[in-house]
Length: 360
Image (cartoon, rainbow, N blue to C red; front, side, top):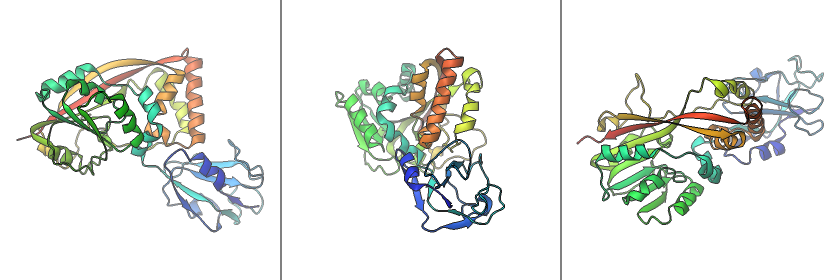
């Protein structure tokens, strides 16, 4: 009997996400994870399969029944045990455990939204009309102004600014996202879409206003303010805004953490630059702008269990979960909403705006 990653099933489980795989072509003996070849590796999931019956059975660990061993190693381990074939026990006493298969690396989270573009368009909330009025008042821009949008997605913010009649150029790296945005705003001849990252975008045009809605965090902090500075005219403005979940430590959102603890692996997410920070070194290029003006807009949204599962199904870290974990997580969350909260919950939001004027 040999224990190894059951590669064919593993690949089928991750086909919907942008995972990177590293293939191991030879058997490698080890006693436990700590003395395996993977001890210093950084990846999201560690799969072992007893190929005795060719089944991925979970939960549970049983050398004799083809069970799956899951360890979200690189963060913290829920299952760390030895794998040995000498006596069929997971007890670190044997020296004949072997592994062959794939190393599964994390996807680039900013690319995950494009894989669920239609759902993203259907369930992601927009932004308050008051925010648009404030941005226009603070910028002093009229209808003859030019707007550059960084990370337009499917156009949640684009459709608020398009009716102003200003010339708009909207950038995004997601082909499916842009296709939907273009279709939604097809009647606005003043709006143009470009499939390109802000880092790679090259244009001689200068803009009166650069906006970014829940997207500036995904631009490299080494260049994002530099690129914004260079894209703006003298005295141009930068408006960064995002929807943020507040009151996360009460009611359903406190109780659901137990479900997350069983099925969710913490992923690093870039900081949102629309929120104030304390004791942080200035990002390159940010000194080209005056101190930010912050505005906050509070609002709520009600979700049925089905609606809430669809919503979190558009969050990058949730998309990036392996299908097995995502299914268990979503089922657990839906059960909690239906059983303990009458089938619906209220989510409290704040839309945070950070408005900056370019210095002359």
